[in-house]
Amino acid sequence: MSAKSLIVEIANIVFSISSDHPIAHIQLEQSYQDFVSNSSPDINIWALYDGLPTNVLENMDRVFDSGVHWSLYARDGKHVFVLRRVGLPYRIAIFDRDYQSGVVYTSLTERSLYSASDVLPNPLEYPLSEVLMICLLGRERGLMAHACGINDNGKGYLFAGNSTHGKSTMAKLWKNKAMILNDDRIILRCRDGRFWMYGTPWHGEYTDVSSHGIPLEKIFFLRHGQNNRVKCRQGVIASSMLLARSFPPLWDRSGMQFLLNFCAELVNIVPCYELDFVPDIPILDYVRCVN
Image 1: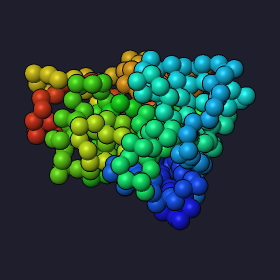
Image 2: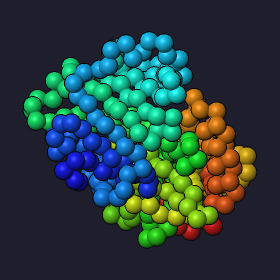
Image 3: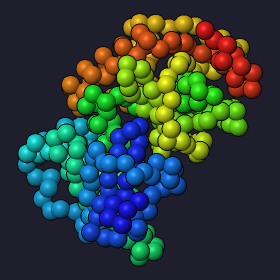
Image 4: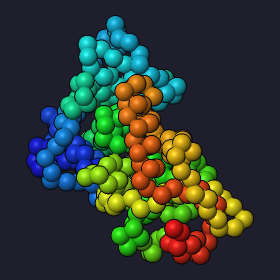
């Protein structure tokens, strides 16, 4: 951390957060501590805490609406994220065409929620952090999977699943047996012709996270079962299963086309399995023996 900016690196994408307030006052969540970096930034963000810009929502085209927490608008070639709480905007972020730089405005009401006057909220707290990452990955960088990632002594296992499928359960079973990258959000990228997975700060029930990356060896699509059992999945089936357990940039046509191609290429190289599992320690050796 420098005196002028806070640097955070996630999946080899480096974010620089600067402000006209003292940078030491910006409070990152505990899960970000392993992601603080000294690398040169790819994305530059300026954080302002003196209120929201006026009339920013006029004459804009709404690109996407999450229905509750956030909306995305287009204006003069820029992307505008509007975050709402109880229907009212509390944070507005304006980024350039390629999401390389942006300004994040925080309302005075939101700032006042922090009891200590010398503490400022993380401008990239949920959901802006994840939505911005999805946008960046859609620019031919990779995808974010709804998955638990495990580094088992140099072997990278991805356990993909939606809510209740067992991702956090799997993370707890591997505790003290392997490195858990994250139990809920994993980023997949292609590097030098090989697919890698990376931990993120955005966890589920299991709070330990890691910023490390590891080559991806196998993908398991989780299901609770009566016995431990795998079925090999390939081609369109495997690609569709991965896509259904990812966070696609639905508002970005070119990003969606990239994601479809990325999934197809990935499952053609990395073995994929549908895994019925019993939540007990024997599943670890069972997974290690799958080939």
